[in-house]
Amino acid sequence: MGVADLADYPWDAVAPYAQRARAHPDGIVDLSIGSPVDPTPSVVAEALTRATDAHAYPQTVGSPALREAIVDWYARRRNTPGLTPADVLPTIGSKELVALLPLLLGLGAGDAVVHPRAAYPTYEVGARLVGAEPVASDDPAEWPAHTRLVWLNTPGNPDGRVLDAVQLRAAIDRARALGAVLVSDECYAELGWDGLWSTRPIPGILDADVARGDRRGILSVYSLSKQSNLAGYRAAFVAGDPELVARLLTARKHLGLMAPGPVQEAMVAALGDDAHVAAQKELYRRRRDVLKPAVESAGFRIDRSEAGLYLWATEGRDAWESLDRLAGLGILAGPGHFYGAHHPQHIRLSLTATDERIAAAARRLHASA
Image 1 (spheres, rainbow, N blue to C red):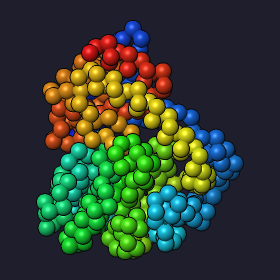
Image 2: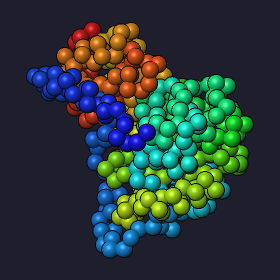
Image 3: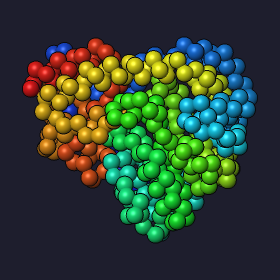
Image 4: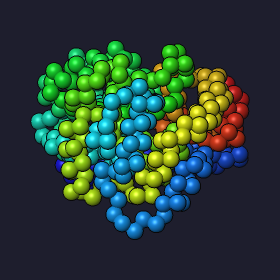
């Protein structure tokens, strides 16, 4: 299978609902894709400006300053001491890594790639691109013997599910028993809302209480798109097993997959400043506190959603019907059909809209109850 054989991009199917939502007298409230709407922090933008003299090729491996910043960030924010610059690697956003990782690891026909049941579709795309078998499963006991790559996503997109340390250790044990690489996509980890995660840091696969210093066969992927409003910068990184990182580095050198030099400098600034991350989280918290009760008042049940950037909701009917109802209110959501075959009655609502648009959505939802 090649790129030309991939299905049409799924978001094209939402266009008629977007058109209907735009016809609302007070305008559309777009809660579908989840693209940040708030400004890039000044500390980051200023670092990018200072780095605009980028006459030389950037390093695929990342500048020494960036690699040190990633190492320091994992120690400070993710309870992961002991990483070295050889254990980390910048990427051009996280989506390209998700899509290309089966290729970069040499997977192909006869291999299985496991991903969550409610999943960002690019995990499956990456498997199909190399002719591997995508397997949707949240239970390590179900992972087949021919599994060679396992994707975790915690907090999850679309469902906001968080895996605790016990669940993460069980995944590591099963992946190692299978001889599979285990990769945890953790880009919403700063956005915990409910239960334990309202007060505790969300654990990651490299957490000292999870990996316990043994990073064999495991990788963590992180993006600055959400926590730092850097979606347009394409700023992300991978960390973990140094042998796997070295393999990825070699492949990425051959393919020319290098983060632009000015973006690397901006990442250094973003990773070194926790204040803007806390401020952005509070913005999302306030928006969530407005939107969540309004969605519930309109007859939807919120499932999981204890962390992350979305509300995972259902009113007990097909997601396309729910999308149509919301489009009539001028609200655009994402259908559960896009996130696998297991949640056809769910919709995903993003918190990435301005305060004014979130308030407008809440008024409409309350009025429809």
